Length: 434
Image 1 (cartoon, one colour):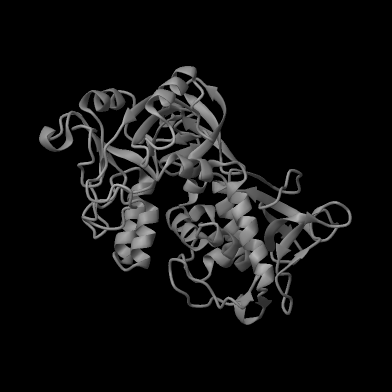
Image 2 (cartoon, rainbow, N blue to C red; image 1 turned 180 degrees about the vertical axis):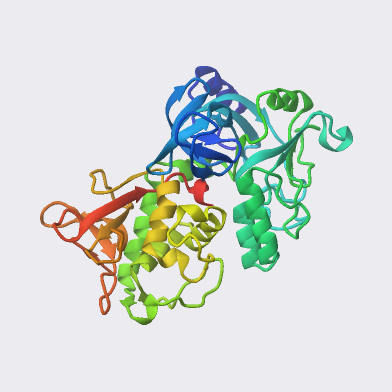
């Protein structure tokens, strides 16, 4: 089983020392965030299925949570969970998690044709990797195919749909249908060229024999089935090392910072042409690399870390227009992610930490927003990435592109009387954005 022997794994489980690098509470169904602990209270925001939240307090059957960086409200306690499933493909292990601790470990089998590959399309025999949830439960499946129990996963995921659109395996209508279903906590379309019907099921784990599903011994799948429900999160990794890499503290901020610093080496020029809505591809589209406005520096830094703000903002604004400025505008993939106000709206709901307003606690790799005093009705008019280098006063610098005629650089902007910090945000686990 790779680097861990079965004996060692059993010992770690018994000792309670086999823990995840992270532990999150999430919602198991799409739900409205309420202003007070009542189903009739004002709806403050929409929370997507499988979205991570931070628990603040519980009152009777309601829990007050923080959504993203600073959006607070109440959710029914029944939709929250910290029980989840983790799969390590290389080690052929499925772990049932409670918070950051594994409570059970099960041997698994994968596809007979392509057990180590990442699923790309129909009939490739591979098991997908990424973040999913149990979208459908079956306690009386066709036993010859699925064994004693079956749990259909939310494949294709939104990340799979984006890739399929990019590679022209699906069209925009199919992509949006997958996005809407997954965010709503339902079974996504199963009959596209991306494939479907990926499950955790029984039938045996002695050898790889499935078509891309995750198979357990029947006794094990019955035990697992008893501990999960519709909406239970399932994170699938290529290996334990892959999980450790992605979950390591500082991994994502470090990747963002590295991609931001790379832009200084090939500095773009702030041009008046770059200020306009420019036709571009989707997903993964960009304006010419030698030009930029301030938002392009952030978009490119996150894309270098594997996160596509163009897709994320478009999807979130399509499903939750009420959370964005200019809510009546039709979402546009050529410009929405290049507006500071839209990035702030997205990050308020999806960053793991931060604040709107001046505040301490910034660290390298964070996203920082400035008020430059422009009379545009908002304090959010400039944005950059917090550098790991400091100015003469000991303040961290900001990687940005300042104004027309300037190039990408690291500047002493934080801790100054001008401009002032209007907000800052820190990203969470990479799977939350993929």
